[in-house]
Amino acid sequence: MKKFVAAAAGGIVAGLLVTTQVAGPLLAEESARKSNVYEQLDLFGDIFERIRIQYVEEVDDADLIEAAINGMLTSLDPHSSYLSPDDADDMRVQTRGEFGGLGIEVTQEEGFVKVVSPIDDTPADAAGMEAGDFITHVDGESVLGLTLDEAVEKMRGPVGSEIVITVVREGEPEPFDVTIVRDTIKLTAVRSRNVGDSVVLRVTTFNDQTTPNLISGFQEQVEELGGMENVNGIVLDLRNNPGGLLTQAIKVSDEFLEKGEIVSTRGRNPEDGERYNAQPGDLAEGKPIVVLINGGSASASEIVAGALQDHRRAIVVGTKSFGKGSVQTVMPLRGDGAMRLTTARYYTPSGRSIQALGVSPDIVVEQPRRVDTTPEEDEDTNRRTRSEADLRGSLNNDSLTEDEIRQIEEDRAKADEAAKLREEDYQLAYALDILTGLSALGPKE
Image 1 (cartoon, rainbow, N blue to C red):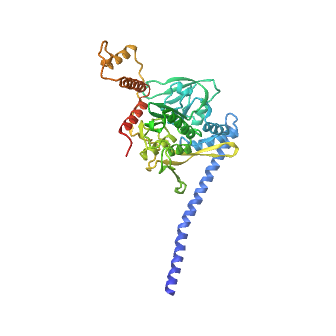
Image 2 (tube, rainbow, N blue to C red):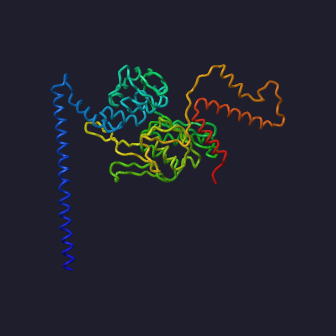
Image 3 (tube, rainbow, N blue to C red):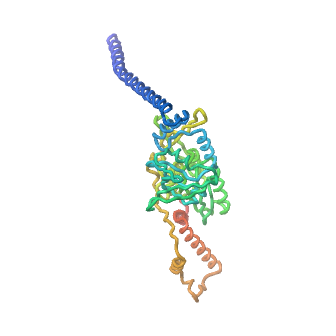
């Protein structure tokens, strides 16, 4: 027994010695690291004083410190930044759905401002701005070298004032100017309509109104069609939707999922990770869903598309999404400002990160650029699509009843509408064709 105690005691002593030997270098390393940080802060103080005293023009101390803070944050990634009190207030207004501006969501890439997407029915949208456009100049002044916030500040101005933006677009040989008149941007989070027997839900942003608008819009369209039994499916159109509130992306996904994970977030520390799960209840009652995405679908849009895709609840159609798979937390600061800091990455239910990769559609469908045709070309197209019934003096089909003739005429009208939609919006027409095909197969047993 004495030998056992002695051995145990020896083990404790040895353990203490080992701990002391390891802790020594660690403490020294930590002390050196802190010393280095203090030296760097002293360097910052020296530079700050030199600028205040020796710069060619007098500078405002607060502006100088604010610029230093913003520079520190923007050096991390394109989405972290300092928000001045005015900027923080603007951001809070935007999440409520109404603000002044051009109507474009932007990021920064290679020093230039890149358009994530224009917002529907805004001055930028009306002027023809497209996802993927690069803005190089604002009113003739280059934005190269400016921070994103500085570039955005140049684009702000009074409602009704004019701005000229120089754009570089893939496929265009030369940069070109776009003139836009600033206006008050009123975001309609969800627009709903019926196309045939399908409900189309166009989600333009994820703000406080998105989920309530989605539910009420869907219910209105179902009622218009005469009940769920007359609905063959839903198109959830997330094209050119730059994202918004994570909470709203989770709620929208939950509306169409009965159970399972919607999204998870993982930060620097494993214990800070969160998982968000769906609650029972499916707004669409199991009806087929097609989700439309493109290069302007980002952030919250990608959460919804990824969740419904991973659960095989929807077919995703279109082109690869933007690839913003990071979460920003807005932290209030003293003086009414705020800090927008990237704190986590998010992952779809299957565990894939969308960061820089985007969501790949199940069916890739490009949106062809519209080509203006001449009246002669339209006449040629009409001539090629004529049938026997269009020929002068053709015989009537005397075997058809009046009801059958009326049905044929209705089918022809639907075909004409479908052809028109294909010209206007090929991707949406493709999505509706998928729903029609699924409906023809009948419900799953």
